Structures are given as structure tokens and as C-alpha cells.
Image (cartoon, rainbow, N blue to C red; front, side, top):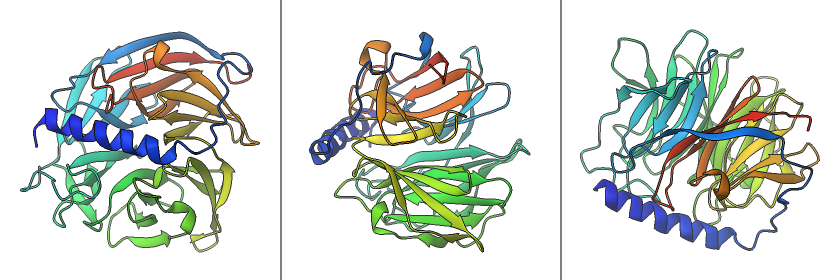
Length: 325
């Protein structure tokens, strides 16, 4: 599949997703409570035709960003000054990923980085030989360390550094998998109905926070909290926010359970308060092009846009954040 065809396919499926979720009661209120972001600017632009559509991000302590480029099957390093260098390219499937569920193309998705510098990446190809969790270490070729079902779509990736364990959301199978950081056979950690899709993509972003795994569901427009019980058992999901049409990835701000979330289809970034209410902070007027992921470094916010639907300018937006405003 060519890059141009890939973009056309993504545009079509995102439009379909927006139609599926349009009935959800949007709770984001533009301008409500003021805008706590200043110094908003586009800090980097990516090559759309080369498949450099940023899907997910992991930040280093110095503010360097490790980013997955979905269509290019790549992991890139982006410095605080905006310079981009490709760290690794995953092998392309023999069929070009046409059997990847729902999307019909192979793509790199979730990414995390451990304290020892190891990078973990998810890859969805629709083939049993490549779909799964991959490990990237400096000076070494990427290595798949856990196979995942070829009929699924591994998407969100979260690291429990203390428990030395990774959690993986599958947006098609409605499952959260868990696997040790050393790799091995994944275990289905949760298959709760709240994780399922309603026709496009379900469980999406994932973060470990305060004794729980938090998961977004794109189709249902929800943010879920799943307690991690003794023995690494999954508790019953708790819906912490709803009406978040097109929610993709998200990040905690450092102020309790306050969250910043990327709403891909609506082209917005919202702040979600602990009571579930949400406020729009950024939109297309700020340069968003279908935001997919968010990260915070001290008082700076990084927002990655993949331009799946706009097909114009995949980019990195940076802004200064005052979480108490």
C-alpha cells in the first residue's frame, strides 16, 4: 500500500469513527475555566508522504521525545530543539499489512522507555510473524519479545517500572494484555465489556497511575480506571469520564487524577478534571492536525498530531502548562 493510499484509508476510517461516536454527549466546553496554556507553538513538522505520522510518544528526562511513526514503521528521536533522527525501522510484512484488522495497513503504535534506556514498541501487521511487542536497545536490531494475536490491533502500551511489567491494549479484541519486561507469552489481564469497540476501535491509550491502569476507549468516548489488585489481578473498570468523542492517548498532569487527553476526530486537546468534567484547551486554531498522543515534561506539554484525516501537516506542538490555572 502506497503512503498516499494509506492516508486515504486512514481518512476514511476516521470519518467513519466520528460518525459512530457522534451521538456521544460531548462534555468538553471550549474556553471554560480559562486557558492554562501559554507559549503555544508548532515545534516540528514531519514528512507526511514518508509515513511520518506520529502515533505515540515517550519522553526522556531531558525532554527528548521518542516517537513512533505509524505508517513508516519507525521509531524516531526528537530533540528539544526539534531535530529528528530515526532510531529503528521495523521489518515490513510480506503482504504490506493489508490484513491488519480494521485499518488494512501495518503500523507502529504504543511506545514506552524504561529507566535503563530500553525502548518497547507495539507493532500491528495482521501477520503472526510480526504482530506484537518489540524491544529496541542501543546498538542492536529491534527484536520481537512477545507475539500478539494477528487478528487484533495492539495499540496502547503502559509500563509498570516497579512491577517490571507491561500492559497492552488491543483496540480490536477489547483486551488488555500483560507481559513481563523480559518478554514471553502475554496473559489476557482484562476482557471487561468496557474495553470493547462499538464498530471501529475500542481500548486505546494506557497509563499506570496510582495503583491502577487507566485506559481510554475511542469508540465509547470514555476514560476508565482499572484497579491493579494483589497478584496483578484486574479489578472492575470504573468509568471516570465520558462523552470524550474520539479520545486517543492521554497523560496525567501531576495534579492528582487530572488528565490531558487527545481527541483525534474532533481535533482537540482537553483537560479532564477528577470529577469527569472536561475543558477544551487546544483546537485546530492552535495548529492541531488530529492529535494522537500527549506527554508532559515539567511545565511543558508535547502534543503529537498525525494528520490522518486532515492529510496536511503532521506535527509536534509544544506549550507551557500551568496546571492550577
